[in-house]
Length: 543
DNA sequence: AGTGCCGGGGC
DNA sequence: GCCCCGGCACT
Image (cartoon, rainbow, N blue to C red):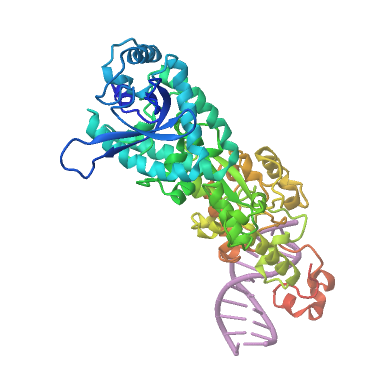
């Protein structure tokens, strides 16, 4: 039913026979390029459709509906031509169902109808590109005109589009618009799709014709209802096909920017939107710029971000030299499994995911101990502090937005090392690093960062130097099984909680060096440093 | 148990 | 600020 209606209203692109201007009786073949109505302002008399035909010689001529030999509307249909068309069309549909006479209006009237169909489509799409200016103006007018033509001369319900169809129209339009503007690479394949489409889709009962957008102003295709069927031929992605829509943009349903921001990334796949959505895959683009980590859903967006924010270029993408490409990476997400992917994506950094190793006392003080800042070990303190700074800077900004739940975990020393290149060992080695913590004199260096395996792109560089932290004493295995959120919280606690917030629990381990007591003994207590005498941290033999 | 040292109190 | 001490953590 559906396709039949669509076919009914297919006018543009149809090959018709027109009377020879010389009047010698030899008909000329032309392709309908536009339809308009005459006598529009005349209240009396019926409206008359005038068809602009692209003749074989390339010229454009206008003919009234009475003049051309085609089954348009209710006008005359030349017997043999009509029957020929009808026959071929029925064959094309593959259902043999008898059709109403006006069905033939869409199709070529030439004897080689089947071939003609493709030829017409190919020509039509080609034509729309060959004369941009002309086609632009024409396309704009076509939409309006066609709407009227349909309503006035063809008995077709106006409101044929379901909401799903409208949505699909938007999706398709968005997809095409983005494909046109994002990457030239995606242009070529869709053309092939379109070419094959003219055969296969029609044969499967799908009528994708220019008129399908005429009644509503949207481009659309009317395919099988189950768009999700992977085996379903792709909807027309041809840039050629959609160029008129883009140029005309009468109703302008899709906003370019909005689409670019939302679905543009999807066009990096050579897959139609429906299939991609079925896979629930989403591509995000992460800014790799230091201190940034911004994640956007579109390449254009991230490029714009990099260009404007990091490269300091305010110009449009035209003046881009492609340098932005080096500063972002693509992240593929399974939107099903990563339900909170977006929320967790930005904050997650290798530092967050680093394994935690318990403190060891081969050193009198773990390097991070200096964060206490009360033992007079200024070097340690400042060192740790300076280490934390790059971490903070290099971490995604969203890190600071994480609320530190489970802050209580940040009660014991922990080392959170990670490699700056982000190429550190994966989860498995993280576990090994934790296991080796007992013997790792430089445990922080031996420990490894935890790179989430869910996405390979997490291994991108975060431009952070190795750093040792004092923080949570959760067991290594715990940290391995933690959810990202927990790990984030843990890191936040590390970054934000005062070193001594938990009092004695964060008490630094006892120094192993000689102290006044040992050196001088109880007998010579007067020789002790003041701190030792006062049972404070020795200030003479600091380690 | 010995030791380091934090927190606190008295002066 | 000086001095001392209780008490905890660690070895």
